[in-house]
Amino acid sequence: MLLRTLAAATLFTLAAVVGTAADEPAKAGAVDVTEARAADIQKAFAGQKGKVVLVDCWATWCAPCVKKFPHLVELHKKYADKGLVCVSLSMDKYGDEDEYKKDKVVKFLTDKGATFPNFIVADPKKDEEALVKLLGDYTAIPYMVMFDREGKKVWTSDEKLDDEKLAKLIEEQLAKK
Image 1 (tube, rainbow, N blue to C red):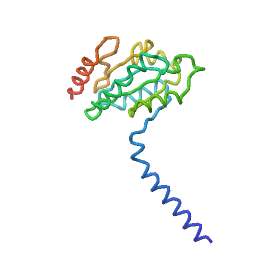
Image 2: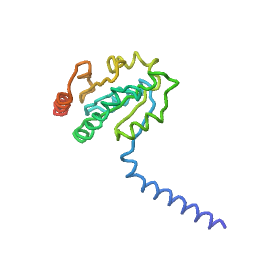
Image 3: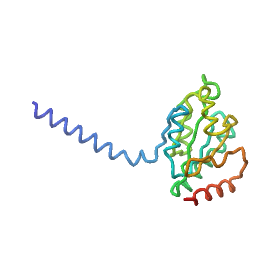
């Protein structure tokens, strides 16, 4: 009986390991979304040293944000292999917190194919001062900010750029080593 139990446990474990390995390719294109406070977001940015980071502050309830978001996905697809890290910061909790639904944010990001780092600002009101210090005045969304390879802020969308000029700026930053 003990031998059968051990054999069954071994087969179950083996099946689980093989099943996990089989699922790995599917997860590679998965969309991950993390609710985070300002300090966690700052640590995530710091972990991108050596890369150019483009951050998009947006919300599902912001029509201009929703309209512009596919461009972030396009930039990710075009430049990720050259050193650009796109990051989305959902400000959905900045609106009516009673209306906030994480599933809505996740569905939007999944539908758009946002396979880069995605955060939902967990407490934008408490973290507003820290986020303004990190990003600039993000409260008028859509709002974008770019950090160079050293982590220095080099552009915010307060300085209006059309898509072509933004692509040129990205290429200039990527060219710097």
